[in-house]
Amino acid sequence: MMTELVRDFLDPADFYKALHNIGIEYFCGVPDSLLKDFCAYIAETSPKDRHIITANEGSAVALAAGYHLATGKSSLVYLQNSGLGNIVNPLMSLASISVYSIPMLLLVGWRGEPGKRDEPQHLVQGHATPGLLGLLYLNVFLL
Image (cartoon, rainbow, N blue to C red; front, side, top):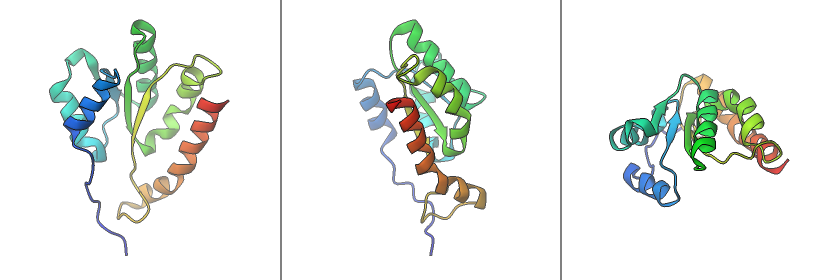
């Protein structure tokens, strides 16, 4: 039997502080229902010029790359796992260690997590998510 979606996440303020402690002060991405508390915290806490909601996930990766080129700092890109397909080309073109090696942290909401009740389209994507993340890791960070 599948359980309900349980919101057992880190406290947004604690996570935000931890990010600041490692130098991440710029946030961009596409809001996700599983990340809504953190996204709301960013919107309320960050200066307006350090939090950009983008039209799609690929644009968020490109924006994070531009921020790094302008400042030398890393950003956090947030997205739902359904947006992983939209970040493949930008990640391969900008973040890959064999191309420009632009650092950024990805925060991915996992809709369709195995064992959690969710919509059918999320269940399919949720099942594929670990493999997609593995492929991205292999191709962006190891090749």
